[in-house]
Length: 146
Length: 196
Image (cartoon, rainbow over all chains, first blue to last red; front, side):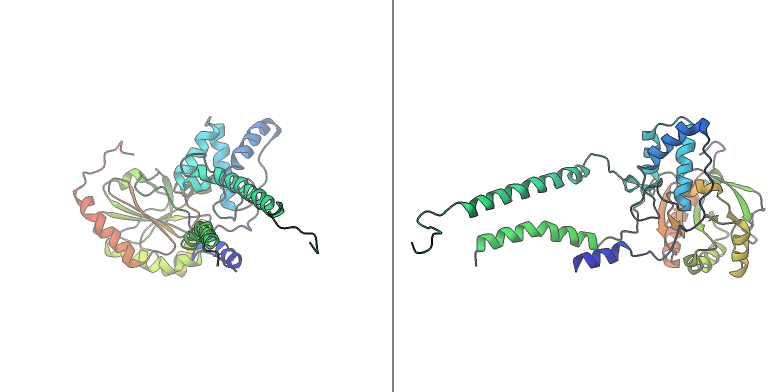
């Protein structure tokens, strides 16, 4: 039930128009001469979340806004900005939300540590319980008739 | 009942329930903006729809952020394909007209749309009192962290973003922000040519 409600909330659409995802993708402008630039653009764009999609990067999204954001990435790389400077620019405009992988600092550390702790804790619990269940209790036997 | 086990189960479940409860209070479609409280990103955008006197600007003029210094600015991103933009159009146009003699500038920014479609839309809506500009490749929209339309930014007289509104802006919210920022605009020194 909770999963159904959560799924319904995830697809809830705000009362305003989002970017139109179905618009035609423009022709690729990269040439062999700047394939290195394209590769760097792809690497940076793959780390930035598309603001008008559900969990897609601006590299993967065909939406017009994602294409325009990729274009910003490309232009900034061409102008000499480092990938970190470009990410910082987008964070200053859209917040940390824009990063597909949140920075490992502050409360974000919990995102990385908590799943590991939960898995380790869960495994430890299972081991303890299984050992308890399989250890014969003193004075009891499973042989019938005794 | 084994109270020890029941208590442990409840303690284990409590954080998960709290996390879900917190999640249900948030709209996953809303991206919290870091921009309010910071200087507005600079822009220089070309007028494609002049607006109406006394707020009209010549088509082809360039509107720069720095020329808005000393005024409250209402920057509204819109598009002709945006249904929600229709809901706020009259509010924005009428409010701009009502405050025409005050140090305030309304500006429409066309988002991912063709100027011809924008002009047709304005005509269909019965006109727009203030000018609208084009935004080539949405560079200004991205500078303002835009992810849909309509979005409205209210800038104070120093060029700081005081408020960002997602969706159609209600008249009460618009007027409240303008009235709270206007007194400072009236006492702000005229802009310096080098400002922003």
